[in-house]
Image 1 (cartoon, rainbow, N blue to C red):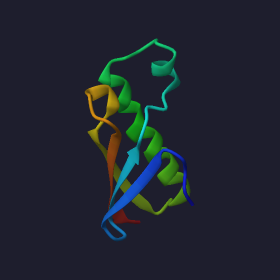
Image 2: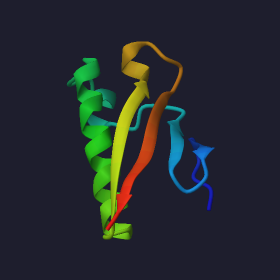
Image 3: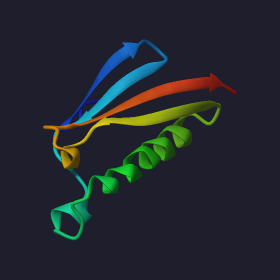
Length: 85
């Protein structure tokens, strides 16, 4: 399945990926309320929530590699599987 403005890249099949957002999707930023890069810290938690709802038996880590609010042209997250249940 493809989502507009989102792409992924396999780093290590079954264990690590990069997830890219080609534009900032945060409504707080778009409405002009917040522009600090600290706002991006909620993104890993949102991704973790989705991953845990899909795979209850796995633990993941999500790390911000790059973000638009930090000056990058896109947001890039590294997703890794920590272990299986």
